[in-house]
Image (tube, rainbow, N blue to C red):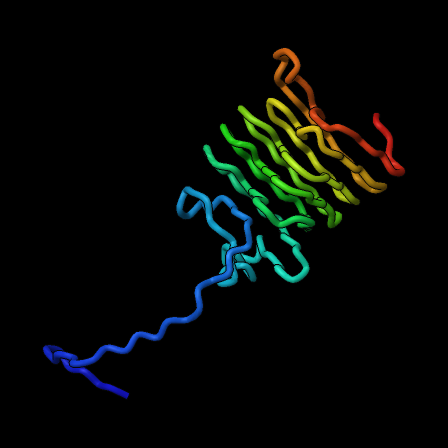
Amino acid sequence: KVVAKAGDVADTCVVVVGPAPVEYAIQVYNPAKDGMLNVNSLNCADIFGDGKLSYDPEEKVLTLNNLVMDCGGYYGIINNDVDGLTVNLLGDNVLVGHSATALRLYTSTTIAGGGKLTASSENNDGCYISSGTLTINACELVMQGKWGLEGNGNALIINEGAHITAIGTSSTGNAAGSILGYGSITLNGVQIL
């Protein structure tokens, strides 16, 4: 133990540095910084410190627990490269993007958990997946934007117990629609009303 008094000059300073955090290829909007936050090994257990967002890297599960975020001009959540990610919904969750997509997925993702997610954007997609398969299990989704639930020639699988409301407000040319852009849509035990 070293005790220093005001005015003392230290000859040696010891700095203990831990290992660099492991990045998990998921980003979330951080309202405290008004920007995107990388999910990593240091913050994943409780990303905002309030119990509303966590990530389990071994199971590849991102849990939203009554999370409500107004994301301004930023994305709400981005899955950059966690192939097979599950977005687990607990309670009533809301992501509001204004000029950016609320839920942006670059690889195969499953949305499940029994809770609800409302993902909306005034000027973009509620949810957009550019590659891989989007699987929706037992949960409630409200996807609203210029395009509600958009794919990029990939697959959409909707399983029993899923309830989806998709609203697209764009009426421009080929890019208009509520659920659009998928190469295939598979409905397992669900129906379109």
